Image (cartoon, rainbow, N blue to C red; front, side):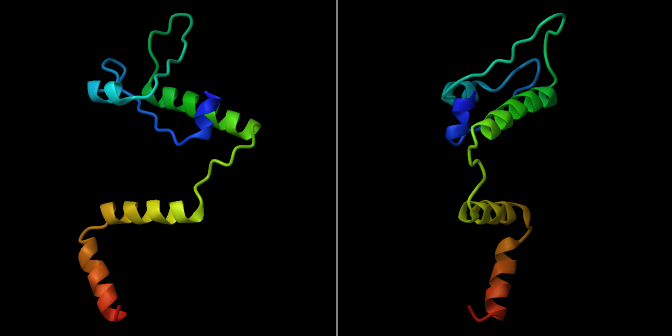
Length: 102
């Protein structure tokens, strides 16, 4: 799994019974399965998330991989998030630009 630490990666976790959608399965570059032993038949999705992320983070720390977003990527992602979550964001931006004569 440490190979995933070298490229931008997205993980999709499905429900216990159904898994991920057919669409996700068709466009996925790869698949990952968590081995289970004993009487365990399935794992809660949050447990699966924790196992995968812990494994990945441990690997990245061991290999000293710089996994953090740079400042520009961070600002861009934060801006996209803000635009999607703030109600009437276009009105707020227009009012701000008007007040600042931009």
